[in-house]
Length: 116
Length: 114
Image (cartoon, rainbow over all chains, first blue to last red):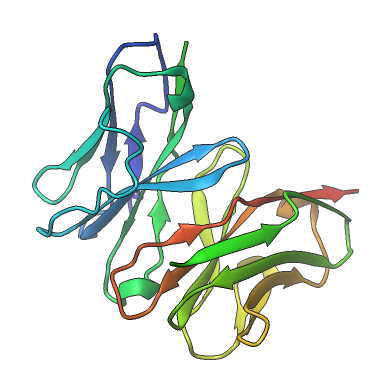
């Protein structure tokens, strides 16, 4: 079946511009995560959505970052007034949440963001 | 708070040699532990996970890992490296009893030398 998809795959933008990154989770997965992967930094948790519960935004690095999930499915990560340090690969993952904390996360291919 | 430490950002092994990637964790409650692999230009995929059943966990592509509570370790091994194992490997931890916030390590890039 279809996996997690993300768009665009690559995004080049100028410093100060806003960008929107999209994630389509696997159908039926109720939990969705955003991570940031920078060179040599591993995966940095950004935000977590679970069903209709309030999202865990504790990983968002600044108020320039926001995310929403519409209808419990598609999610959009928005970065306002981009800075060069925002350059990274942004990964989205979804899980079924059947087993709680032991869930396997299914990752999308990522969006590579370059801020000039 | 939970955390994970991966020793060695880069590991090189010869084809056919033992692969050993180290992971140590910290968790205030019994953990769940994961190894994910990221092949070049691909997304992460699960290799194996420990969920408090058997301490020796077998995963895909001949990999296995052993949960050692006394050492707070979850090292990944494979008896014989193959060229196709060249990838970046991430250890991750989440805490049982709560919602699944997963903490990832910084990754270990495995190079296999022919």
